[in-house]
Length: 189
Image 1: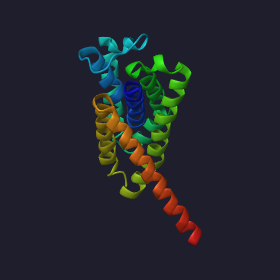
Image 2 (image 1 turned 135 degrees about the vertical axis):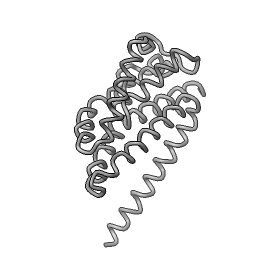
Image 3 (image 1 turned 90 degrees about the vertical axis):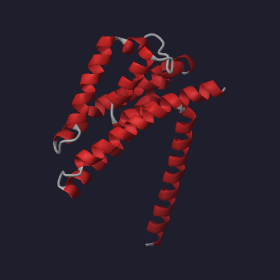
């Protein structure tokens, strides 16, 4: 039971991180699966451990990290990543720790698509506001923070998945609390 919960927490953490940066979690999972025993990828996902796939992910990560720090280019990149990040989230949810063996593959893909897609939508909606309020000078800093969060989220999902589950639960409760306060303020006006 704990192992199944841990696997699902890993899948949630990896998919959520993919919503911020599609290739960072994919690359870290591929490298961890190839060179460590921290994560095991079942077929067909074990293809991610190929040196060619790892190399391609590294190049794509470099492109995404560079494009995401340049005003206007980051908006184009976010448009392109509207497809890439949810797909990366779906792959990570399905591939991580054998979750596909426990869940129907379609359900795993849908969960990953929804998680990464939701994070991506929030990120994409917030970025133009950052660009407008800072005249583009804050884009690189926000992008760097997103990359760091994706890195930390991915590492936590692999090493401490239960902590990821608790963090997600805390974040959801905090969001619900904020939403409730906002609604009560709007009702008072």
